[in-house]
Image 1 (tube, one colour):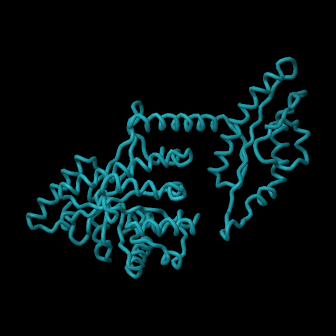
Image 2: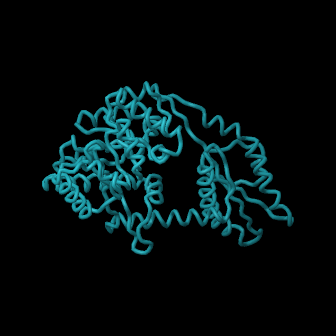
Amino acid sequence: MPLYSVEQLQGRAIEEGPMLFAVAVGAANILRDIREHITNTFGGRMTRYEELTEAFQISCQQGHPDAVGGITVYATREGRAYANAMLRLRQVANDGADAACYAAKDAGRNAYRFFTADMNAKVQLRLQLETDMRRGLMDDEFFLVYQPQIEMQTGRACGVEALLRWRDPERGVISPSEFIPVAEESGMIQALGARVLRDACRQVVQWHRQNMPLRLAVNLSVQQLQHESWLAVVEDALASSGLAPRHLDLEITESVIITHPEKAVATLTRLKQMGVSITIDDFGTGYSSLSYLARLPIQGVKIDQRFVHGIEKNRNDEAITQAIIALSHSLGLRCIAEGVETRAQFNFLRTHGCEEAQGFLIAHPLTEDELRSWWRIQEELLQGRERQADLWQKR
């Protein structure tokens, strides 16, 4: 990393990589002026940021890069300790600039932020979380739970969604919303995703042998779909477990399609050729065009829970839900609703033709043993000649 004085910064183009600037503190108020000086310098060069974010073409595909900048300001004293202080400052400045970059990303990208003390605390927490996750991956602290999915007309269980959980020995069970983003940023999502798929496939095969013919749904992130080895991971999970491809349903979000459309179509087409089904998760929250949606090799759409939760509360949510169900039927796709928590929501969805549902009204995410017990109870009720779908009305 090059070292510059603040004076050298004046009129200098923004370079690739971090830059370090040395300031000779000769007056008490100079540090107050540094932030304003750098702000004016970088702020005046935001057109350079705009140039960096212009679209570009690669192999007939259009890319849209983002640019973020992190700025950290520290002071050292002149004298004998100057050289040693600058060596230490290089690392401190790097860490601070990294923290400021994360803040710029959180602000929506294409921006710059100054480092502050609270940023450092957040970065330290994130780094500790990443370290703990790597330990947890080696020590088998991650485990799976399964949320049942049912046919709305009959009430019969038709599938489960495998959900990842992490039990930290000190902090207890940590929410996926906290550790999944870190896994995606750090690249650990590849190892975690492969383990989830492998273990879930093996578990569902065991249930099949116990006369529990369930379909397995597993979420697929953008990073996983982009990875060249992911198709091999799917093939290996199916082969090693013995699960038939038709029993595996991979759920992807609309953002996967939007950010890498051609790559997504190619990978999804290959998965379909393998016999694996694809469902668009959180449908209705993205920006994919309907014409493009019709070209995708998908078999189902999942209504996002924010629309489900708005049933009988918000007419717009009800209208969007009806439209999604109608669209799925016109395209010959299976429609499943997530986040079903009330009888009113269940009745509305079933009345308008939604085929499947999952949510707390039906069952919370369950461990292997809990799901086996849940299945046994549902089968006993079916054998008792009571329409299981009506059970949800009695709660």
